Amino acid sequence: DQGTIGEWALEGLPSDELSIQNAIMVTRSSRYPLMVDPQGQANRWIKSREKARISENPSMCITTLSAKNLKDQIEFTMGEGLCLIIENVENEVDPMLDPVLDKQIIKKGKNRYINVSDQNMDYKENFSLYFTSRLPNPHFSPELSAKATVIDFTVTLKGLEQQLLGKLIGMEMKSLEDTLAALEEDVTNNTKSLQLLDKQLLERLSNSQGNLLEDTELIEVLANTKAKAKEVEGKLKEADERKVEINEKREQFRPVATRGSIMYFNMTDMTNVVNPITSQASGWMYNCSLLQFLEQFEISVRNSEKAQPTSKRVEKIIHFLTYQVYRYMNRGLYER
Image (cartoon, rainbow, N blue to C red):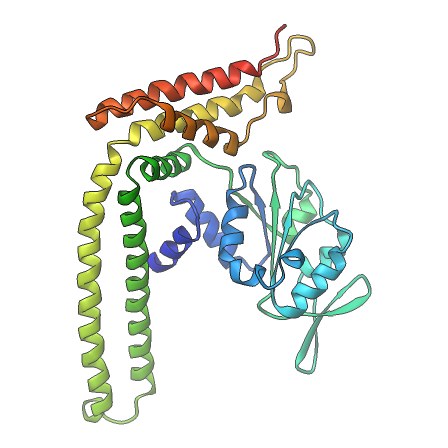
């Protein structure tokens, strides 16, 4: 629903359709998620989403498979009902995690356990486990793919374009981007309020006894719900109108975001350049990260010539960005 999608956006999830579908899989799947995340977007979103639980003990909630105290971290987070984020997964995971992945829960009275390395560890229902991999094309074993939900968070052309547009507006027209962020937060809260009112009313109706028309308390609740719903709907309608106005101004900078997205994928395609000696793709030698590109994007926006009207300013940024990325990549090329 729109309320949940709005919450995800506030937590830092990109707003493109693929990212939303991925988030649904992360939050709704019965198996623990294994996220293919070469640009680190899923990692940042999960850490933002789980910020409250991570803050209770960061050193125990974020780890890697090579950590010496991995077993202690599993025991602590499962027993306390926290989250465990395992980063930089390659093609396999430690077999010690198999009972956790399979959710081999042992019930003894009111308590629940999972046997990990011949030790019964306390298990709480609200425990969450996340795996992230920075490999762009990992080759997970069929067994691992069957035990976890593999989700590809690799950035898309359209998704990156939307992110770059937000970053650009934040630099060029900060007040506009702040207004949009506040508006989206307001819309999310109002949407959730409307859903809560509907839920409360349905509960009242289902628990009501006897003749509904004689239940004065229920009629009063119904009247209050109707009034509040009308007020919230009015706010949502007003917010939609304001969003249209703001988006019209943002769209003027869309060509910069489009060019930026194309330039990033040109940078990543450098890994396909054939090495003249080995006659094979260069691979990691020309590998680039999203953070590297974003740094060049910000430099281009800051250092390009200021101009009016907006269309002229857009031309200046595009020209500067194209040359900046070209020079940045050219500097790292190996000569034959």
